[in-house]
Amino acid sequence: MRKKRALTTEKARAVRQQGHDDAFEFALAVGLPSDYKNDPQAKKDVIDPSGDAHSVKSGVKKWQVFLYGLGRFEKDHAFVVMNGIGALLVDCINAFPTTYAKYARNKVVAKERLRVPMVKLAEKLKEVSRLKAFLNKSLFNGGEVNYLTVKQDGVFHIFLNKDVVDALGDSLEVCNSRAIAAGQMPEQKVLLRYNGKNLGELEMRNDSEIHYREVRFNMIKPKVMELLFTKIPMTKKLNDKVLIYGNAPRRFGRWKST
Image 1 (cartoon, rainbow, N blue to C red):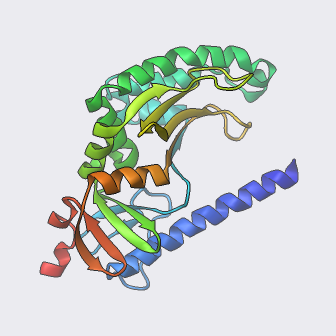
Image 2 (image 1 turned 120 degrees about the vertical axis):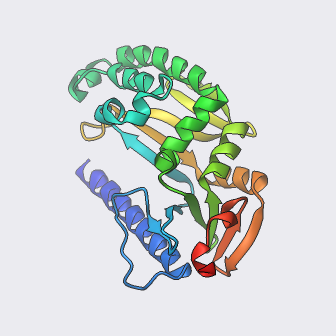
């Protein structure tokens, strides 16, 4: 067990380092100096020469958009006032006992309790305006981050925050998970689906004493990129490493005209 945990920790560290390396590569591609340093704890992975913020994502399969515990949803004002969504995320967490040991003794009871707020959460997010508000908060911290910048096939693709939120919010189907195998319980997740396949998942992470009573929001990179490339056309090329989409050129690259 210890060996497996160590390997998992090492893999997570490698993923984080790759993210930092990709952000630095993007910083250089848009003309920032080689001594540029980002804040590794912030959603603002890169501040471009115009002073705009980019969330730089790479990876092959999944993006972990957030992993938050109870305190985040109780104290973050944006979640608190988001049409009841924050309160339902709190209810999802509180469906589980306060300690992992208590949960491990009877997991079925907690999972049964979770079904109620998960169903209500899916119903809330089926309303497009609420879904867009949730996506804007989750991906761009309520507009604090200006761009989603994705590295794919060695090229950085820049999308304006509003374009991303509109494309996702207008295209996704929201539903709950089903029990598709023996021993599974339905309505344990909220699924965001595109073209009949899962693009994102809101779920509880309760796999250990370390990660217990946390809400995780994952997005499947290939499905996100399929949607964005379909809905938001490329409108400008900065250089061989940086392509710009949709309305992003109206804002991105302002430093080049000054």
